[in-house]
Image 1 (cartoon, rainbow, N blue to C red):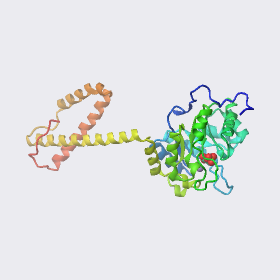
Image 2: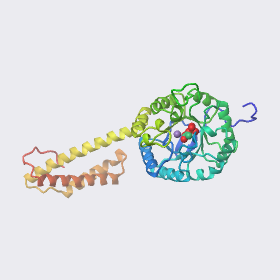
Image 3: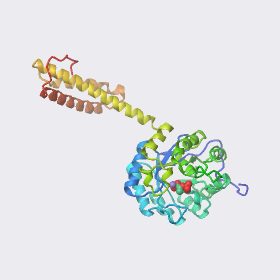
Image 4: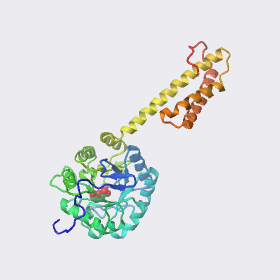
Length: 363
Ligand code: PEP
Ligand code: MN
């Protein structure tokens, strides 16, 4: 980089840059996961992929509309229609989107549909395209060329930065080595090397690095351990039917497993557990109400006491604040529970449950 007078990618001080794409932050110590199909193939496919990755905890949705294929006879992508579908899938799932731009002339169109522009491995040396994405001022995901040195990769980033676009995230997606067991070799050492050289965030892409879905989780975990600022992974509702890169795409279960291994689902798991506990508690409460209802009926007492229900709601509403819950929500929730309790009591009476069951606490 000696020819450059003032390289903009080199470290400034000891803290890295944070690149924001909507609410997603690369470089703040989090590990955002960009996920989605290799190619946008149809509305059904990309909407379902978006649902899977959003539910699994992905931070961003990916999907290729203009595909840089090794062979001109392979599927080349849906083009502008693919961009439209990806944007719609992003809106439906609430995820910001990233997609590849292949030519300088496409930058405006792609920038109008996506939240981040991907500059693919095959185009890393394409300086007119680098300059064009730089001028767009959109966040850029800059993939490393399969045969590029780290210095060349950072110089590619310079082309974007030199246009005044500072929002560059680097992506290590595997380099070409003598090894044939994997499609490329994820250069894991590039992550800490790049982090030492530049302030720009760097993520890893185990799908394109390995070409094998069984290696995505171990390489994604390795990336995080090495200090990467996130990862990209290909996810398809049915990888066996994918029009590109089938063997390196995860299905829904595979993606959930990956996110579990990354620990991303922990909060979601907690929510699921609490929801099940709430169900169990509601069921217990209905059981008690039924017992009380039968008991009252056996003694010829009316089932419903508006005074008792009012008192109950007032007591719970008074306690709402101490649980940091809005008082009106507490009333709403318990009014619903009381309504269903009464229905359960009536059903039990109509079914003629035998009298003489043990009396429970008053409802
Ligand atoms: C892609 O991410 O869709 C892609 C083609 O990747 P790469 O440029 O790394 O081959
Ligand atoms: Mn792909």
